[in-house]
Length: 545
Image: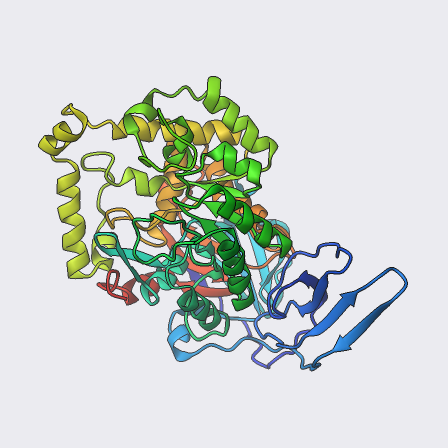
């Protein structure tokens, strides 16, 4: 229980100052992007980085030669931003909402990888972190709502980098969890997500809009467009590209619709991937990939920004692999034998790092099904599932550990997957220690036991099992994601001036990483959400909505 002191609270509405203006190439005016130096002849939009209100005005700039330029004002407005309002559906999950909040006597893990700092006070004001200091020297404003947090830890909000909005509902079929997943992500302390592939991109865009406008609870969303998939895909829900022109057209269309980035998928061709990367980069968007026809080094040479899942899916090491062929996505027997510290795999790691290609870890989806009886199915996971989804998961768990099936497939009573899983961990550790940017996600697919939010927490625990310290694992799951997204100045670490996206945890995850599951309050832009209420709200919903 958190003690709340009774201090005066300011209830008058306040108007925020006019937001700063920033230039964004080819973006819709309500989207904030990193400023890039305009190239000659490019069209630019002057955008307003306005949160939570958005001004849908556009002032277009056309750069001609160095001697002349002109401005066309298509529409101008402007109002002064006011504090965000929340619908009753959101308001029922809010437990802390005050202009100024002081988190006193709390342990701080700031996300930089530095040691935890004991007995700190963090002051939040108007959605941002105002100060972080020793509790003994803190200047707590008189009007602050003060929380006495002895025994608690604050970490930055998690940045989930493989956090879909869909869930497996049948063989090769996935359903959008538009109600349950946003709530679960936020409840677990995931304050920012990249959807990393969308089956219903319009739905994802509408979810983002509803969250940003205060109509529903959920994390900040970086929406990835529909999968960029080539001909021959196994997935009926994916559009199959017909060539490079189609790839370019698809990228530009969905950027116009408001998505942030893209994910290439297993059967995309070399030329299609090259065209997609070129089109995305022209407009400041990034491309990641879960690939099969194309190996990691080939994709890196094309300019891909990120690769999903790690060594487990890199087809370039499969024997007899032909260019442009997706023969078999995974070979756990071969993978377990690969040498990470020398030879081709080591060279691949160095090549990716030299080309600034990130790697997204999704250990939870591989753990589920790799080991008999692992992970332990927590009551909170089973409680969140619908009856049909629960039965499906339990059935698949039994099937995955059937010794006769393992014997038929691998010619041995011992599954090769545990050894392959450990090799994946070894690869990710080596990649990071060599200087690679390792990101953290969950991938809520597989047999259905990896759920939004809960899986993000499990990812951090598994990074510790892979060899990282708890502080390093938290850094990967927070600061690294923010760095990749170009948001390091706003999120990812705890420091004055950054957004107040924080996770309040009972216990000390720097000493016992499993404490990361003990989330009680999640702050997003300074508003504290009740984790337990969010989880209870989706009881029995995952698998249906």
